[in-house]
Amino acid sequence: MAKHDTSEIEQHVLDAIRSLKYGAVEILIHDSRVVQVEKTEKTRFDTTRATN
Image (cartoon, one colour):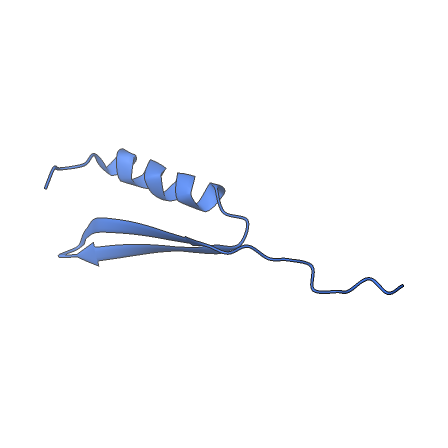
């Protein structure tokens, strides 16, 4: 596995957060090192129905 610069990891996490409107960013850590960043994005729809 390639070694990543700390600022590269931080930038990746920030980009994931900034790109979400609704969702979650999960950071996986092994032996005190970030090894994976997961982004789960949700799409929300207006649940109110128009009445005629």
